[in-house]
Image (tube, rainbow, N blue to C red; front, side, top):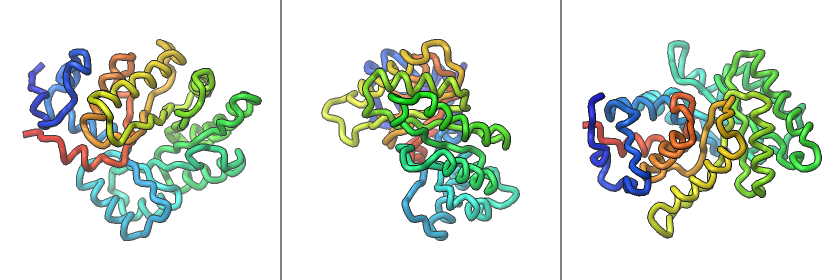
Length: 273
């Protein structure tokens, strides 16, 4: 396998000592190989409350020009985005069908929006179950998930259960992850609230590690779904620890996604010369 010095990817990067000797060149044969992985495994997220057609068209065209495989946009923008992509376009569309916290929509409302997203030909459906039912009615929590999964599987669409569980106690975090995996979505998507400014070097690495430990405690080696991590992953100092932790805790990077709105910045910061 050809070796390249990862320390020259960019001048300001994560210290190798923080990553316990992890070197991405163990996984990626070249910087171009790494760039190709980023373009195909970053879910480039663009979810403004209001998305004018001109802004949507600009975003879609820029995503295509950069070579991203998929973007995540509001369900109301999917149909128009398909027009901008065209019949020959390869860009896949992911959409959310509920509020991030999952407490705003009833099961029937989520099913209705899911059906709309499917009719608009979204490739992937990401949705939030109602976290408030975890304590009193875990069966309702699973019913919430399964009602949408049934529709996505019938339509041959990929599914992601989005869990914004960073403020829950550890026992409910474990319960949410386990119950979600029991329903067998294609992905479990975990939100990690990374700090915009670290108070010490490696703080976000340590913070992310605690979350991977929680995920590992819930699933261990019994991984029946793929994993997506979403957060303020805006540069390599935040990205490389996420990749390191994914491999450390036994996730195959072919089945691992990163959700971020900073995909353009990450690609711009990658020197493959």
